[in-house]
Length: 130
Image (cartoon, rainbow, N blue to C red; front, side):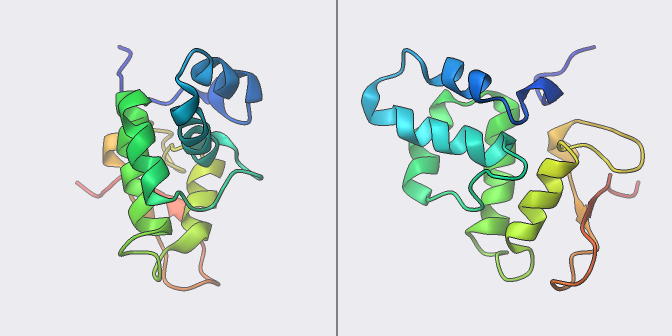
């Protein structure tokens, strides 16, 4: 079963994917969508924060899984949880390709960052305990 809340791994670090997604969009929104996609998919050299105005402009042009991720990550890199998580949480989530570190589960609706208690602690993506 393929879910609309799974992120295909071939999107990561793919400039071709990003450019294909922004081709044909109005010039006034291309930059915002490009920034949002780079924020989500460029592991080492993507932006580590997403300006609110760009996020809001890009949301209607993202697929359901990307919308969940952008909102989830935004609170950790720009919003209320920034002091606790920061850019390290984003980098860790990208590195894991938004999958559980232990079981590989990939539904972005159940992502959870574990062990994020300061800059020196490890950051991993895990499934919530049931």
